[in-house]
Length: 139
Image (cartoon, rainbow, N blue to C red):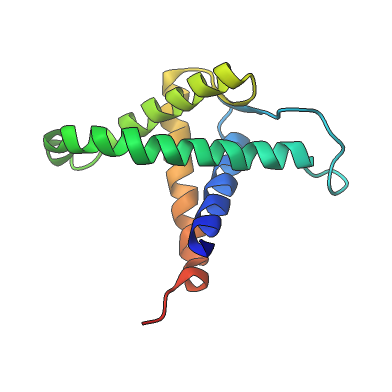
């Protein structure tokens, strides 16, 4: 359970970094609120990041794995670069869910989705490497 919560926090922080860096990504909180810290995000925005990270994790875990299994020959042919295209499509699917919920992550264009997927995966990898000793299991 602890590893799941750490992974969720890592993905939400990586999502916040991707929204901050990529101009085609925007995050709409479910409600307006006062900042937690002066000049910082509101509680509603933090909860929105956590919820959308959970939605992205579910979509990536269910639909993303099915796509990876079916498109395995393309992964081999492109040496894994097709993963950027697949993750961009998964971000667009998160945008579709966010449109249905009226809050969350919104991607302006498919190309911004690919760039956002690249920034999201790189930042999640770097943060995950920094927090690896925290989630390390003893045998």
